Image (cartoon, rainbow, N blue to C red):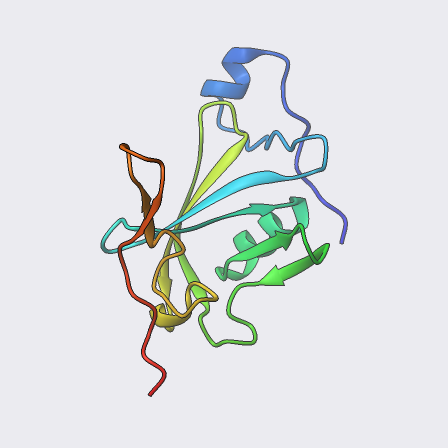
Length: 140
């Protein structure tokens, strides 16, 4: 798939204040994508997109990502049914990160662990250990 995004602008004002989408992909051709629940604002996951994933997300309204481990395009929920329907896409000031606000078809399958968010642990400030905040789903 041919990508159609213009190159980032060397003009800071154009890049940060302009109305042209000019994603600043990293050396690997990726941009960070933060995904939150449209209603609650809870962070669901952080992933990466290449130009094709961003274009498909914009064209279809379904979140697509780039799997760094599998090195392939990934339509979130294609196999699990946990499709992420995009309600809004935002881009940060210098256009090197995107924020997707989504509605999940099956929230319980957002994370591959069966939780509604990939952020189910907290780091203790006292000893640096992880504390599980959300238990895994029961195996009933």
